[in-house]
Image (cartoon, protein in one colour):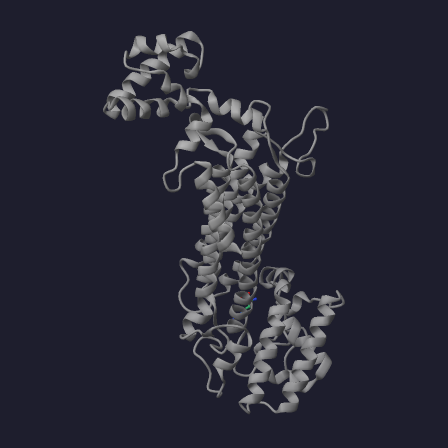
Length: 463
Ligand code: ARG
């Protein structure tokens, strides 16, 4: 007989229960209870398959399936008492099923193991998250498209090295992020397609001698097919790492945009006004309006990429097949998923609410000799000058303007001609920021016409 305190699920060979510290390090119920719905869905599919293949009776399977629904409703209603002694969600659910339906519950674990069970539950959970991220990314992209369409011809400075480079349009800048989040979206979809195979029925590691139907459970759970190798099915977590990888890259994109919003909303830039709904005040400085949401989005990449690194380190030295180390996968993924979703929602809200300060953007767009490249291009086009020489002549004009303390369009024609005698008045046409952006019609360029084409293309793609 086993000691009463030994584990009721696996305590047959144990004379005593675990030390309290053992229980504390071993139990995962405090966090894996988040997979209750997936666990129950997996068990219901398994029970139906056991009956369809004649491994258990129809009446036992019906009792299991019904009882599992009761367990789910108890959990959803917050009426379920989770037990640390029962370690994890799998054994908590099964033990409660036994309370509810008695002996048939003991047949549920036929032809499976917690190893394939947890791999299945976790895939289902990550798949749901990939779908949620997919939706959140689309919502953010829609918000960016609204901004891009409204400001397809608003001019602002484009930067390299955070130094004024050339004028660009607000819409073009917004659409740059649409491209980035669009690739994040495709990464999420790629990951989903690759991970959608079912581990259930791999059992502990070697498969089972019971005549199970893995196609049936895979189909019932919305998987494309069963995993083809039982050792791989229970022991890899690359699907979770792909989620974390895609999440990390997406969080990095969010962080760069957040950094721009922090800069743009500062008193020194005044490019955008962030809404009160996504800002906070200071407890001591009454004038302050801080872009805290943007700052926190900027910071989230740290924990999300941290989760990616942490799980990579957990996995890298594990021999096949399952090892308990792998239980450390879930908290990392849960935390990363929660924070990515929060960051995406906060960014969407900020983008929807933010107001571009178009006057400031336009003034800044023209400062810092931002149309110097346009001037050089004019010399090439109109005077047939080699670009290198044009670059040199333009540099001399910039130096002249700088010495005079003015911008390029403020130099008189005489002053221009002192640098190069063939310059004519038509040069002023290209020195205005609107002309500058309008001229950049190359595919993917900043011209309003190009931006509108980009917006239309993405609207059609997203639907
Ligand atoms: N709680 C465990 C986990 O998350 C479930 C699998 C346990 N398997 C085992 N052989 N002890 O990994």
